Image 1: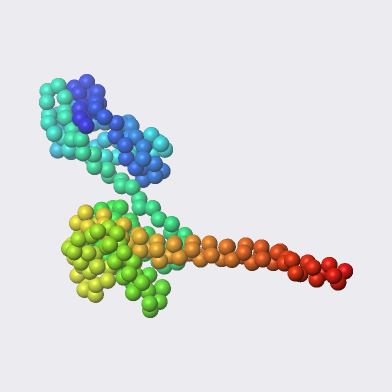
Image 2: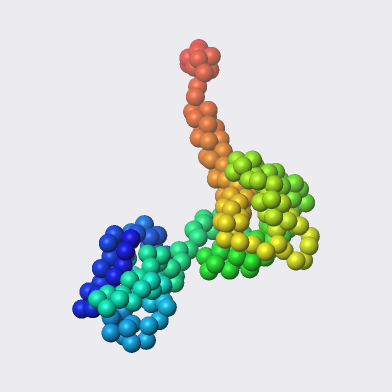
Length: 235
């Protein structure tokens, strides 16, 4: 994708841009509404510029930061890499979580959305601690089994596995430095573990309870052939 700002302030974007909207959650096109002025850019020659878009789905503003590639006499060329100022929020079914767990886990996901990966790692450790305290003595073994399932399904290598295991289950006060790629794996790991422990458990219990209720109700309305014959003879 090529982006130009021409000398007549005409904004040219060769391809449409679509992103997930942090406001409505839709993967929608970004429509430019406020672009930098050609004369101002040539006068100050900044290395980066800001562009205001709006979401085609909900019309909320979206702001991006773009590097300047070249200043030419007839136009200014911008990088095709749009860095979003406001990132999409991580979504989760928080209503199934106990209040204390929900509060900590919300902050954990917010750290990831803000790109604060080392703070995110620390909050993952706190999420583990508060979940284990909430679920009881046997929870650590269960959570470690869930972690091994993620490692197996995701086919994580030994280095990634050791890093994530140290963050989640380690006793060291100093956590490993976390990079973007490792954080991307950790976010899916912790979300899956919390989901399996709370949401899947709650939904399965509710489904079993409902099935039993309807089964017992149906059994109570069924009259066997022998019972009907006895009532007929007595009549």
